[in-house]
Image 1 (tube, rainbow, N blue to C red):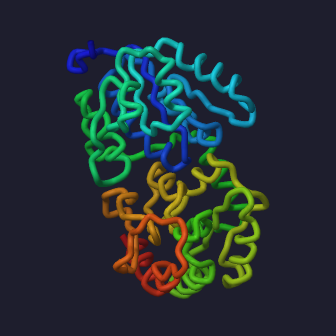
Image 2 (spheres, rainbow, N blue to C red; image 1 turned 90 degrees about the horizontal axis):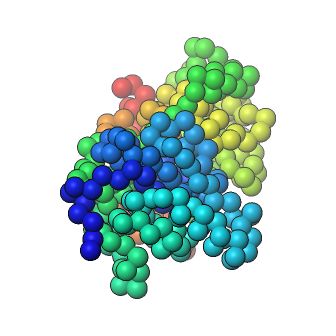
Amino acid sequence: MAVDLATFSPKRILVCQLRQIGDVVLATPSIELLKRRYPDAEIHLLTEKKCAPLLEHNPHLGKVWALDKKVLSSLPQEIAWYWHVARTGYDLVVDFQQLPRCRWVVAFSGAPARLSYTPPWYTRLLYTHSSDMLDGYSAMSKASVLRPLGIEWNGERPRVYLTDEEHAFARTLLAQAGLQPEQRLITLDPTHRQPTRRWPLAHYAGLVSLLAERDASLRFLPLWGPGEEAEIQELSRLCPAGSLLLPERMLSLREMAACIAEADLHIGNCSAPRHIAVAVGTPTLTVLGSTTPAWTFPSPEHADIALNLPCQHCNRNHCPDPRCLTGMLPGPVADKAMEMLKK
């Protein structure tokens, strides 16, 4: 017999959100809502190791299970680890992804309540309760899975919790990179592994040139991940001398978040840094290619810009003619950025 969620009072909850980094950040409103609904419950999160740093110091989480695929190099090791996680004594498991690794944990948990979005027929028996996901802002859509628990999203934004020491580190790093007290900072996210979400580097350089001409106090911090150093070097070559702040090394996720928190505006592609910016309270402007406006937090401080071609927003990862990106020239983006900086 299925648990009556109207009277259910779980003591230990597991939330499954393995990846990607941005999606894990977008799960933080749901974690906050679960804690608000069940203040006495202990909430754990299952995620991949690369995502775990952004969950540090989250007051709503009692534990983060960080899956390290390099350590779990064989199927028996994986299954043993999933069993260990699952048998921690959860009475509610919330699965936001239904990935095979999540399904192992759900199956092993034996939790009386196992909640997810509406599953396909072949995994339906894994879940005791499900809910159709609502369309709209991605964090709201994710939180809509929790409706059977009497939980509704009411504008809660994603959150990354930074320490005073991390804020101080970011200010020191930026000063060492050349940022003066009277200057204003814009963080840039010019990279993406998918070409249909990557505004051309030459357009980013044109944007930097236009904004620097309009406001001489602006400085720009480009962000990058592993293997993307060459793109940042190319961007530096294309941009006006002295406009970019270039740290000596790639920043960690939390260092990146702390630097974004110091910015007046974040401009970039549809990628994790835009969600991190929302999570630390920095306004965002995103150049959209194949993705939809559903990834944009619904408030005046956060905006996206797109050509809105008939083929947008296709959500494809490859396109022989990505005019939605190549055709979006720096001028309109600069205009929107200046408008946002004046708010």
